[in-house]
Length: 411
Image (cartoon, rainbow, N blue to C red; front, side):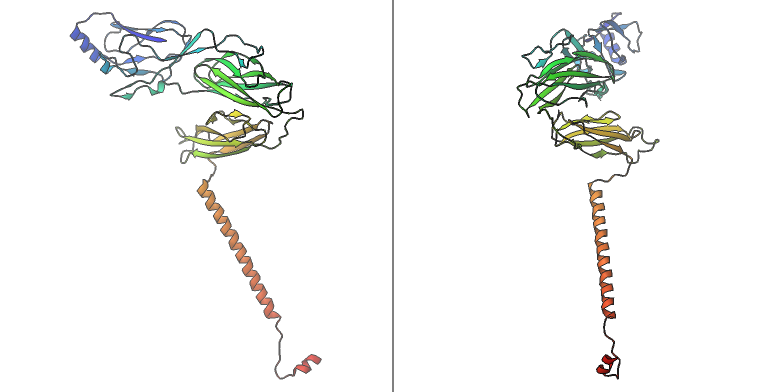
C-alpha cells in the first residue's frame, strides 16, 4: 500500500490558499523501485519554497514497483481538478492485490490431488493504475504493468508411462517483468498420480527462470489409454497455469517417429525498414501454428525467446496450437521449434528480410508455372506433328513419265 499525504508548514488565508493552489506546479512522482516497509519523503517540484509544503509517502508492502519513469498530475482544491482514479481526501491508496502461499514445500500424502494448498501470511504487490482527467485524457498509461510470467512444459518431461512407473514433469517458469517477483507454486491432477512438488516457492529476478519438478507415480490400477490432466499454477502478481496430459500406456510405450507439423505466416513485416539506418522503432510479427497427430504436441519455443501462445493449451494435445512472435526490425531472424511428447522436433529458421509471398502471390506463381508447362507441352506436340507430316511426304512413291509400270517392276 502506498499512501501520499500533503501537509502545509505555513498557514494561509482562504483567498491566498486558493490562489496558491491554482498557481501550484504539478507534483512529480519519482521513480520507485523495490522498497522496504517504512516512511519515505516524496520530492516535489513547486514554484513556492521547498520548505512550504511536504508530502509524506508511507509504504506498507514487502515489494513495490512503479513503472513508467516520472509522471505528473495536477493537485487542485476540489474534485473537478483531481485526476480520475484518485481519492479527493489527503490520503491516496493505490490498487493492490493480495497473494498468499505456503512458505515450505509440501509433499503429497495420499488421498488428495492438490499440492500445495494456497494459505499462509499476507504478501502484497502494488500496481499503478491509469490516471485520466477531462483536460489531458490519459496521463500515465505507461505506468501499467505489461510484462508477463511465462510457464512452459520442459522438453524432458515424461508424459507417457506404464502402470506403477514413476514419472517427472518439468515446468519452466520465467519472470519477464522488470522487478523481482515471489512466486508460489501449486499443482493438481485428476487421477491422483501426484507425489511431490519441488520447490514450493521462489523469488525470480527480471528475466530469470527456474525449473519446477513435479513427481508422479502411475497407479497400478490405472486403465491403459487413460489420460491424467496435471495442472501447474504459479501465483505472484498474476496467476498463470499450464496443463499437461499424462497418458497411461502398456510396457512397450507409444511409438511415434513422426515430427510435428509446423507452419507460419507474417502478420506484419519490415517493408522499407529493414536496413540498420531505418529499423529503429519498427517491429514485425510472426504467427506460428503447430500440430502433432500422434502422441501430441508438447511445446513451441523460439530463439531468441519471446514467442507467446495465443490461447492456453494442454501439453499433449492433438489439436492445433497457435503462437505469435514479435521483434524489432533490427533483429530480423528467429528460429522456431516445435516438440511433441515423444521428443520429435521440427525447426524453422526464418528471416523477415527474405523474399516472401502471400497467398495471392503464391497463387500467381503456381498459375504461371502451370501455363509455362502447358506451353511446353503444346510446343512438343506441335513439333511431333510437323515431324510426322514430313516423314509421310518422304514415303510417297515417285512415278516417272513415259515408262510403263510393268517395265519398272522388272528392273
